[in-house]
Image (cartoon, rainbow, N blue to C red; front, side):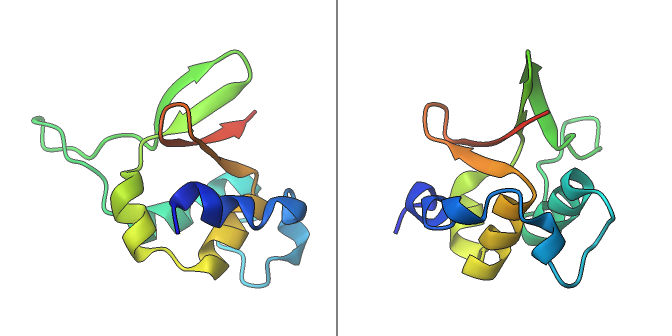
Length: 101
């Protein structure tokens, strides 16, 4: 199953942050960032520092710097459900995770 299909199966649960039992933060976006960071190790730049989780932004959207292939190998459906409840979606146009802000 592709990462896009895995995210789509939880579309009806979008923005159900209050349903997450063991929150890593009181803020949905921070919870999502911490969860993603725990699943996939960030890329390290030549400076020796890891990349920021926000890759780019335009108007009212941000895209996240997460290797989607590695993510699909490691992430569970429960973790995807949590991300969807935090407002994270899969953007198939650029093979990236995205959020509206």
